[in-house]
Image (cartoon, rainbow, N blue to C red; front, side):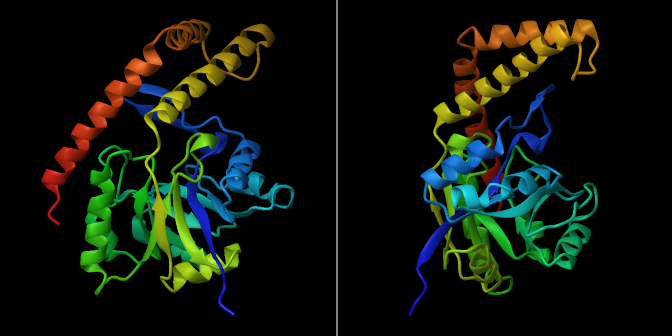
Length: 292
């Protein structure tokens, strides 16, 4: 009897993803609790999810504790910054240091029995591997990333992988790249079976496919609002209890004022719309650079 097909989301961030630097600003990459991620994974009928926080497996380990409660299996992973671009390691049980070459990083992933995936390989806003994906011992390539809302970047990845498949076959991966629990499941990897072991086998044998839809702009705006809102709560708490944040007083005051200005005005909507326009322009520029 043939196994049923299930769906997984293999690129999700939680509050353990650390600090992001963008256009000179620093802010948490995600403030999402593992429990909220699992709630949405169950709601979206996902059989398996992978938690891939930046340069750490801690989020995956914490989320994995909730498997039985929610009936969703969790793959422990990490989105690792290499000297050549980001690489996702799946099925990890030990931390992998950042800053190595992509080749060294992938070798360490495989030494753990893990799988190496190239996320958003042609992204113009993330440090991506680009055409180097065809020189690496990758198990899969993310050909659909829901967080990259434009169709251009995903289409470049898909067309490049298909064009080179005869000499560099890899599994086709779809993911949400969720930074907010509400985004979980926007991008999906389909595989035969229901468990993370079935998923592992499907990726190794290159028997996966992908699906999903771009993350709505409203969710991107909501993510930025939630990040600033949760940061404000921590700042206020640090003023009252004088703990948690080891930041000079004047910097905390400035950050708190800036945060209140952001969440108390239409700025989240304005920056969201402007950011979306900026990313579309960057994607079009990327298309001119890349020869498919």
